[in-house]
Amino acid sequence: MAETTSKKTSGSVIGTADDVTGVVLAAMDGAPNARLREIASSFVRHMHAFAREVKLTEQEYSVGVEFLNRIGQATNDHHNEGILFSDAIGFSTLVCLMNNGSGGPTETAAALLGPFWRMHSPSTKDGGSIVRSPTPGPQLFVKGAVKDTAGAPIANVEIDVWQSSPVGLYENQDDKQADMNLRGKFVTDTAGRFSFHTVKPAGYPVPTDGPVGDMLRAQKRHPYRPAHLHFLMHKPKFKTLITQVFVSDDPNLESDVVFGVTRPLVGDFQRHDSGSAPAADVKAPWYTLDQTFVMAAGEAALPVPPIK
Ligand code: BEZ
Ligand code: FE
Image 1: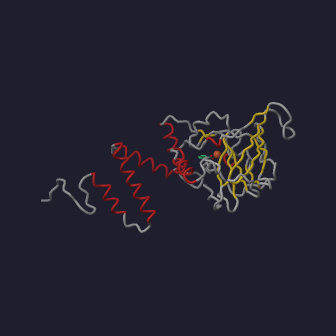
Image 2 (image 1 turned 120 degrees about the vertical axis):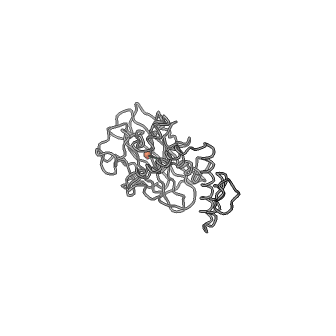
């Protein structure tokens, strides 16, 4: 009769729970790709340590697997619940800041690309407007300067800008806005400068009808991003800069649901209640923003659009 009491084992036969991690790591150790070996083994070590630390019950394990399955089921060509989950636990921002400028003395801090970037936004002349259909809201005049890490202006940087409307909707979420409303592409002049006219964006909630929404409710968290402008700056021989500039008077500046706000990216938005406006037919109050961006030398690469 086979003996069923615990016995020291070898190979992949497991004696007790204490043996599982080592046995799994040994099984994965033959992967020829060294980076895959490193990542997969670290992932297994941390996952097993997590289960041990919280003494995960089988019922909790099932809830977790169901949560992952629901993330997959909620993902389609137009929505990526997996990225949203990563965003809402700060993992996207962690990876972004580990791999890009994080506001040190050199390049401008990076921020998430987000799901709303579209390629082929309309080329717009310097100083032009990105308001392409009637969009009520406070007028905003943006001036930007792009410099290298030695402080010299960079000419001919292509700058993609996109933002939500004053009611917190991107044009592709809102039937009332024209195609490509509040999106534009600019090129810096010989002084490294660019400018445009727009409306002040509003903050908006991330989608809450899937498992991430359930997580936020369970954690008593609101789903809002503070208002921001997105910038993608591209020029050969410079590391592509993907960032956001946040509206300084937004009530959710200190509680961004996706943890995208870093101190250097809070813009100096100035409110003007009187005086001569920068364009005709502009009523007070209007806002101005003058923002400097620093690009580091490196390899230029455009991202893959996050959704179709
Ligand atoms: C955005 O800024 O567009 C965004 C980023 C992360 C999640 C949702 C939206
Ligand atoms: Fe956004």
